[in-house]
Length: 268
Length: 315
Image (cartoon, rainbow over all chains, first blue to last red; front, side, top):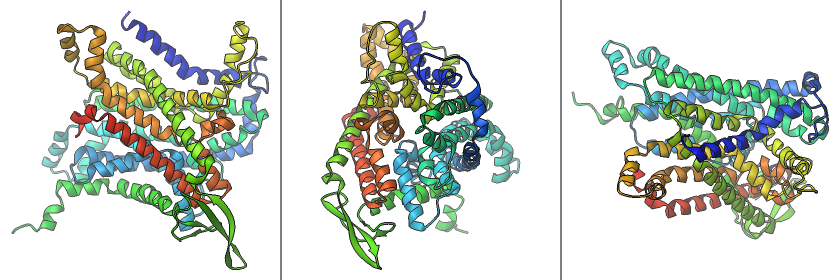
């Protein structure tokens, strides 16, 4: 077998990566309040309880508002930046791109407290809007990473052909470039939506009195009797994330195939 | 008619590029650069309970410091606290965070390298993106719940302990698995795995396979070919994965709080405490700036030590 020991090792590594997620449904369906072995039998009551938590529903609604807004805004900003960085040469490009991509590596707590300090400084009350501002900052680098691959593989002669045929820069962008990078845009929307839905630190610092889904989950960890319900919620969220990611991956690959690029794999 | 300098600039490639990037750049300037500059400034100011007094001082970093409070319209001294570098607790937490994130980085990158190597060298090109997709999925799924589940795996009634007891390997549950630095390292190494694998994979993909054949033809063993050809060429990827794991882990908040216990607390927990509970923004900012300073210093030192691998890479 090709790659013998490396294959065994990589499979073992995947088991390590998936171990926590694999446990999630086991305990979500377990008929016991304590999250430990031995299992006590099958139940779906934790899922049923999800319907009876108005606080959870409010957090879910907030999270959806935030995730929809942040993914659209981050992808829009991502389109500008990745188009600029792949198509044009201009002074200060490396510095500007470095600054825009910085949230990818900067500890989130630093970003969160810095934004919190600014909001206090200018007297803006904390709300869902301030969370959106923070999430856009975190999501934009991911959007750029995905969209750069889509713009990179674009053949510039297509755009020039459009100009020769009398299109303006704007109509050429709309008619030629946008359709070609559309799969990348959809992929970026889905990924940034997933990131925003799952983001905790920014929301924890910037949401004020409102809850988002992760902030709600974090709060519930303090009450051991509520943990099985949270695991049931987690099971649903993980399934949702995987569905979103699989769709995003499908569009990402289609986008690269469409523009004739080579698949280098991965989102980052 | 001779075009003016201004006219040449408008419509030039540079102008188009700058115009195109400006919305994103302005956003980052306003909500990233400006806030970071602001906490830098705050760290030199005086805490006045619910407001910041713009009076320059260094005591948030060194020496005893006073916070003030408005009493009957007069600013009066309220509390005395120690600056970051004069506070044993803050110093201990920064040192611990540094050590934990160094250990996490080393473990994560060493464990990740063979995985990246396998996917790049032993998987057929059509299946590579499927493998990478499988590796990245866990990274995108609920971070909080993943951290919490490590508690379930490592706890005294957890998966590992019950498993080992069932097998008769141990009689008593092992208690040192959870609520200390070990559990923080395991959980963080798990969380940052894809971040470590992807840059190494990208570097390995770029290696011209004929170089490896040349090495073998010149009589090197497979192992020596790896050490003398593959590894040096993969170093830029290894360096980026080291930085991309090291920098965020030092500021992780959730993992130390949920699985770290009292002896696994890290500097992010202290920053949160200063900002939210103590409401002392200047001190919180000084801690944040100090830990960023440590991160930058260590990263630069690391880059300096590895400068020979990056030489050909300067674009």
